Length: 487
Image 1 (spheres, rainbow, N blue to C red):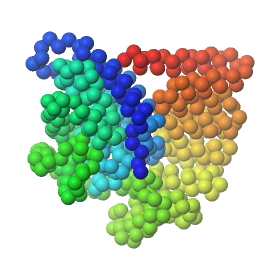
Image 2 (cartoon, one colour):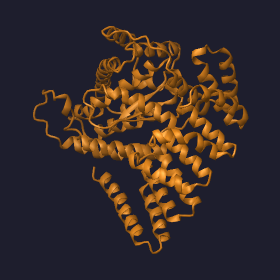
Image 3 (tube, rainbow, N blue to C red):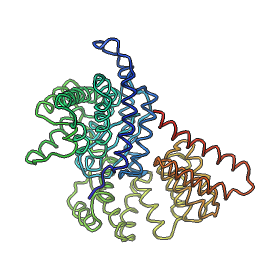
Image 4 (tube, rainbow, N blue to C red):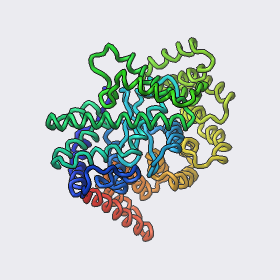
């Protein structure tokens, strides 16, 4: 059974929304009929600065309480795809963070501060990269149009409790859409109808803006209608629709609308995207399928695949072999794939794991060194290189590499975990506890983070500069907690 949002996040969401409700109630609405400009829409309900703070807090809770995947290769692919769309988005006020949730439901969601989550189940059903990009473009549009904040603004006449229920439902729906819908519909009949109408309006706007963004970014604008049709066909005879259809109702009118909008742009006939196929194979092999089934599935897929997707099937089979400890078989496949595409990050990542499993981490270091020399801060290369260095007992080299990486990506969980491991094996215990504190902070567990820093302080001995840094970080964590309480 796939995990969903826990009760602790639900409680956090409710507490958070009570604060947001107060913000909305205090706003001054002098002209109820005026339409705000796009750039400042819903600023009365929640400011952009506060939206960033709330988004960061919810993201920390999601890391700790929902099955968020921390996979450098998949993260690199998804972030790159999302960034290509955001470059062509209007009104993007902050950096976007795209992330994966290990859940087989067909769903994606957006929330405060430019955070967009994609369920692995959606990727499994997408037939091509334009279909996946159409979903991301739709969610980016929800963010740039500030639909959550605008819904808060639309509830200005409601009581704080009704507004809290609405926003609480939205936040719960991020990881458990069915529960979120129930929460949003818990109010009066009139209030529920207004929410449904407002959601329909938001969906139409996100569809329109998303398809335009899709076309400008060089994807096939028909990707949205194509994905809608795939979903409609798959679930036509199902009595209970999947999560995404609960939060994004799909009608024949909406499909026809998407086709009509796509017709306004030139049709793009794109070749099969290799990175998309590899990412899809990785999700199936590592996250969606059971071990033995993954091997059988990809064996059959290799035999049946046309040449254009054979590499992805071979890659999936290699990952499946690794899961059942058939390392030699996996290596034989990856040797062939790497020979044909020496710089492919998917292949370099898999081969690094193979070398480490075989007790040959220095071979991985040697393989990665020329690539990391040209691209030292790429997350796939840097983190694989650090992992190989730790396995080769070159702890100081790994620590130096990870410090450089964290200068540009300070919130990447795996980097802090590898840093903690390197410090532990190097018996540098004060720094180890400091790294553990950063991991807990990424989960929003500030009390645990402070505990780790207290341990670090005790191990610091006579290093007064380090003790001063630890005290400063403790203060920062406590300040962050207080800032959330003041929302």
